[in-house]
Image (cartoon, rainbow, N blue to C red; front, side, top):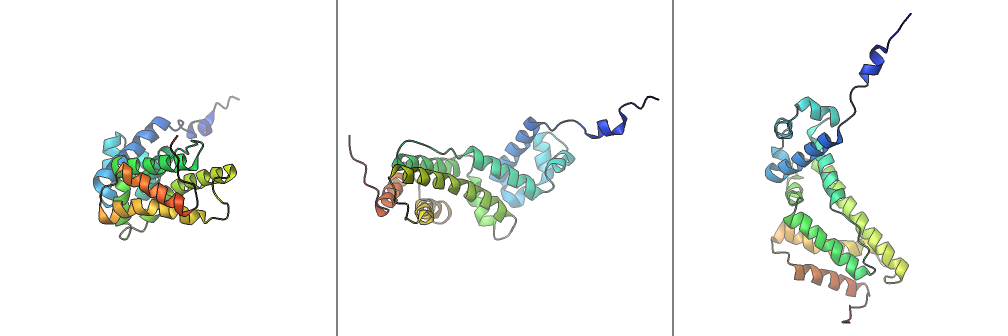
Length: 203
């Protein structure tokens, strides 16, 4: 007796379309930038993505989940671990890239998320994703510097990272003072001197 393929074969459904996922996540980042987390709705996200709301919920179970996926995508795309051959060059590259992302680029909404976090506890997870991903890049750069003998292994690496990124976020969140290229360079140089890294010498 012929049994055919039965319902089990069709139950698997069509494979997930990664281009559709990318489109939804790009739109969620755009909405976070324009509306903030409080103003983000799944209905508007679905309309802008050109899909049904149920399509989004099949992929991510809640507004917080799809927002987290978008922020994670941004964090991974915006962090390239440099290897210039020197700690100074690597830190300049990382800090300038952070400013480009959070002060002028696709991550400009992240400071706004920080301000909203007190009213929306779920935002804490989004911010942790960004912070953890970026700090990992700094840790890898410091590990390379230690291996090259540029940085003492006994130094407090977490403090060094705090001193690098703290002034940038102070300007982004509190003073709103401009973050110029010269300012970023001065932060890097001040921290390196404090940790005993020799100043750069002219060729």
